[in-house]
Structure formats: C-alpha cells, structure tokens
Amino acid sequence: MINQLQKNVLLLALHAGEILMKNGSEIYRVEDTVTRICRACNIPYVEVFATTTGIFLSIDSGSDDVQPYTVIKRIRGGGIDLEKVSMINEFSRKFATTDLSIAEGRQILKEIDQSKKYKLPLQMLGAALVASFFTLMFGGTWNDFACSFVIGTCGYGLALFLERLRFNNFVRIFCACALSAFLALISIGLGLGSNLNPIIIGSIMIFLPGVAITNAVRDSLAGDLLAGAARAMEAVLIAVSIAAGVGAVLFLWFSVGGVV
Image (cartoon, rainbow, N blue to C red):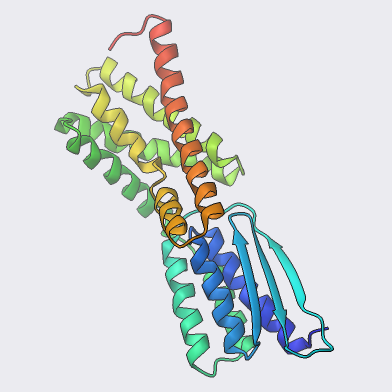
C-alpha cells in the first residue's frame, strides 16, 4: 500500500489532469502534467495513460515488498477554456520548481477549477462579433453584418441555455445551428439581409470544432493515435450536427414553399 503522502500527491495530480481534460487540453499535455507533479514529490515510478474519457495512473514507491498502486479517473463532459489550461500549465511548473505544499496545491487547483469564464454579456458579444465579421469575410453586406450580429447572439444564447439544461453537445449544436439558419431565412424574407449564404456561414462559424481538430492533429503527431482518432471523430460528429441542423431547416423551408 502507498502512504498517505503519496495518496495525496496522486489525488492532486489526478485533479490537475481532470481540469486539463475537461477544458480542451491535448492528451499528451495531460499525461506530462500528471507525471511532472508526481515526480516533483519524489515518486520514482509513474505511469500515466489518458484517453478522452478517462485517466489511468499507476505509481510505485520502488520498494520490492510494495505493490504498485493504480487508480482510474472517469472524465465526463467538458468544454473549451484555454485559460484554465494555461493556468494548470503554470501551476505544474511552479509546483515542480518551488516548495509549494500539497495542501496549497490542492487549494490552487480548487480555485482554478471553480474560476468562472467570461461574463455572459461578454460571451454573447464575442459570439455576435465572430458571426458578423465572418459574414463580411464571406462576401456579405453591412446589412448582412447586422443580421448575423443578432443571429449569432441568438444561436449562441440557445446553445448556452441548452448547456445549462445538460443537453448533449451534439444536440445543442444541432438546435443552435437550426435556429441560426431559420433566423437567416426570416431576415432574408423580411428584406433585412441581402445574401443568405454569408449570413448562415458566418452565424455557424461559432460552433466549428477548431480546437478538436487541432488537438486531433497534435495528439496524433505526439504519438497518441487513439486520442487523435477520438478527437477527430468528435470533430466529425460536431461537423455533422452543424450540417444536419442547417440542412434540416433549409429542407423544411423549401418543402413548405418558402422562397429566398
């Protein structure tokens, strides 16, 4: 059996890895962080295996009469918060190079885990600006810009609302993109916008799985082919949910005789 100190180190390392995993970190970064924290506390043998849904951690004190201790941490849910990823990176390096105690480390991790994202009005404004400027980039007019500004706000707001209701990520994106497409059609029908395609494309850019694709490539290049394939499949499923949401609305619109 491991002693209490080693158990506390193990729990500290697992918590750090969990925060990274839940906020969009690459798999190799999770494994490196967990290993770094354990070895900073003089645990000689550390083996970490992480997937997109769990962390497997095994430690050994190096004594012949002591068996290795292994624990599994199931990871559920998650999102994208690269600021927390950066904070955990900074914490792991600080923990490894200073005399920071385990109790202090657990308190720091708790504060990082409970830290809030940007306030809701700022998130909504960011989503609106992303949607509207992408509309201009894809050839929209200033009227289309204004329409996308409102549509991006509504689509992102619906996604946040469904997230609070604990809807599946793919269902949330499907509904948000369906709403964005429907509002784009309404805006064209009312004469508020001029070009349907730039409005729809700009409005759904908020939901594109850019981080998932990037992590899939980086994990694959780092040799974590299982994690890379899982991330790539996640990106594909998100892309399918985006296309399905927009496609379903367009199909229904034209099926009932709607025009653009």
